Length: 485
Image (cartoon, rainbow, N blue to C red):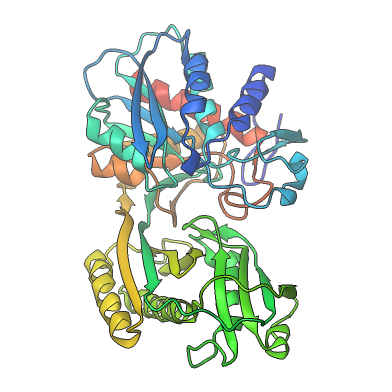
């Protein structure tokens, strides 16, 4: 018998040695989104083999990197049925020294008590494995409607694998259940999402005065998922706060030559590094509890990017004002209930700068007002900062997902929770999910999964509960029976 928060005592099937072994093998494969996921496809294929499923691999090349979806299908090909989906790509782990529960190796899944630690344990990989385990329990039974289990790529790059799967038409399911760490609650709606990338160039490329000391300003923050930025502390904003005054200008006598921070557009950055020359008194005066300043050399290299930093601040403040102007201001069904936004990363090289920001919109908010803002802010910066060339592009858009709470899928799913003695019920989610894609394709869609995204996903020592993983297996098994048998 097990007893967990928010649920009654009940019998669960024990975790198997094979499940833990497979979990460790999945986590061991580096599927950071930018690296592609081709390496994991043979392992996924091997886990699906012997279950009587037909397998389809869909490949794509993005920026010279190979990615792939793997779809396993069982039952008669008559349309309808159920899609169980999960993405198997992950964010970058960041500073590996912070992965203390894994021996500073985020790709080494480590079991401690009821929890398994490692990159991808909560964000998709192990939920996919739970879905496969549920289907394995039913292997050999005749399905009256088709069952599809999909492992997708590029969720962190813009739901790309799910979009390819939906557009291909190879799955024509009536219902979809998408992996998200929901704490075993049924999610029937999620916020929309926009991500924007800006590129800036200083056309004058002024060289700093020679002979001045070069200082490195290290700003530290707290990582968090950008869906709940209040749980983090944005290190890039901290860096801009110490390098740019209230007038929006870099202090006189200071020359910024480089700024690098963050590693994902949908993650609150926990680090930002600024190199600058100038008055030792001014630069050393920037130091604080979370800002470390040190002299690193007297050899000068690079161009002044003061103009780029000031233009970036103008863009961010305009972005902030836009987000606060959207209506409705709040929706009490979501947590947090308002529109949230994040500055996720910035990189500079010589006299060039790139940075990315995202925004999570509530149902009913006007997407067009955001896309219309891009050319408007470009015009404003071009007018007020004539030495700066600027370009902006929409990198990702995901519509909100909204499934009727009294529809068949939500009713069946919440009924299963009741049968299992789980009181989590139904809820909304503030992140964009692959559910948005399948919902837009006409499937009645929910999100569900073990673990929590808040304070876990996009954090060092990401983890999941083994007990909740086994409960998820039970849930998926019953869902398959309800929809497909």
